[in-house]
Amino acid sequence: MRGKRSHKCGQLSERDIGREVVLMGWVHSKRDHGGLLFIDLRDRTGIVQIVFSPDSSGEIHSSARQLKSEYVIEAKGEVRARPPGTVNPCLSTGGIEVLVKDMEILSEAQPLPFPIENDIEIAEEARLQYRYLDLRRPRMQSNLILRHKVCQSIRNYLSQQGFIEIETPMLIKSTPEGARDYLVPSRLNPGCFYALPQSPQMLKQLLMIAGFDRYFQIARCFRDEDLRADRQPEFTQIDMEMSFSLEEDIFAVTEGMMETVFREVLGQKIEVPFIRLTYEEALSRYGTDKPDIRYGMEIMDFSDLAEASRFDVFRKVLNNSGRIKGISVSKGAEFSRKDLEEFTAVVSSRGAKGLAWFCITSEGLESTIAKYFDTSLQRRFCEKAKANAGDLLLLVADAPRVVNEALGFLRSYLAERLKLVDSQIFKFVWITDFPMFSYNEQLKRYEPEHHPFTSPREEDIPFLETNPSSVRARSYDLVLNGVEIGSGSIRIHRKDLQERIFRVMGISEEEAKERFGFFLEALNYGVPPHGGIAPGLDRIVMLMAGCNSIREVIAFPKTQRAACPLTGAPSAVDSRQLKELHIKLDI
Image (cartoon, one colour):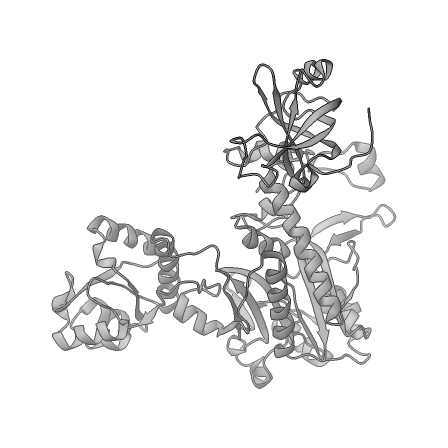
């Protein structure tokens, strides 16, 4: 009967009652009630119930009894209202069904390795091996449709803001500046290799030099690094660059893009402008440069009060340039001694030597160390913590870096434990004024915190050679719900400054010319001041979809071993291919 599909399954409604339709899709489930046979027919748009009756067509009814899960069929019939008492309010098509008059099996299916359902546990290896089946599940289809809508919204918004979408090449020169490059051997140039781009960084800067003013690209990027839930060897970023721009310009465009995407795709109102924190503020108040600001429990510094106590442990830490900081937990006094031991283990896993605690009572502090704090000092602790009776104050005394990291980790742990995190809320925050360099003790040299093309703060340039650790970068990260979703900076547009940065990093003039010669040459020909940002598409969609891994929003992801169970990549190649590439293996 192969004809033209008239409707999609999830698009039928009561308005179609009495209409003859042709549907095509997968057999989602089958219910045989002896006489009548009910099939839930599924396609990308949803599910509709189709009915086979021996009274309507005995031959078709008999054929339908042979149908099995995931058979692909074509069904022709009349839309009718479901009988009273059989309406399914959980389906958009739950008020109607299709009485089938003709049916053809388009494709049969063997027994499946797992059901095509959302609420079942499936080993990830199996899901990735049979990804084409996993992607039939409604949740996975919803995730990829969400991703499509996000991309569509981004393209429309940036085009309206005067950006031009330009593709940059996948085969580029290897210029190691972060993770390992993925290398591609050149057959026509024996012994030479291309690299897959870790990002289009220098290429988009060249586009600014070329005068395009505003560029964007939903760009594929490749990094050969150890993987985790929010990393993949190949990922996608929303690459943006703007000429004659300051930080405020880039913030405004990015905030407008996020506000538009969340409103158009999720119907969510995002508060703009976003909160801003310097790098030092983020570490001091949240213990991390990726703070989740959906809940409180900010870190507070009690060093001045601890110094006035008689508690020798605190005083010793302070004498060694340490800090005493803590967080206040509402109603936390209800935690047991076992809970407190668990919290101690949490901070110890981040290098802290221990955890002090105070239960807040109407009379002051209650703890094994409360005796070292007089009544006036206890009251000042409570006032500074803005704590009430029944709250719990948790303190860590150690080196500043250890204190911040341990309390930041404890803060996140308690938020999960106390269910303070609302997944329906989206809170953005800008982190600014990052250090320009970090010192690599192993290599005995300075390395850029961001990348070597980031401009330093103008007032810090004089300290590049004399005190590199004090130099702040004109870089910024965009954080959403505790996840870094984007990173960017104002770029260096003067050749002399770029060469100074390379020298601070220990890159010789010869090495700079070898690695970045084409870019340094371009800096000779009139370069506009410019900057940009590259939000990670995978992470944004992951958070919008309420997932915990970017693998849930990528059609064909790799495992944590960077392997593809579906295709078997990476795989060995035959000797003829290696010979053509002038490669000999020695493994």
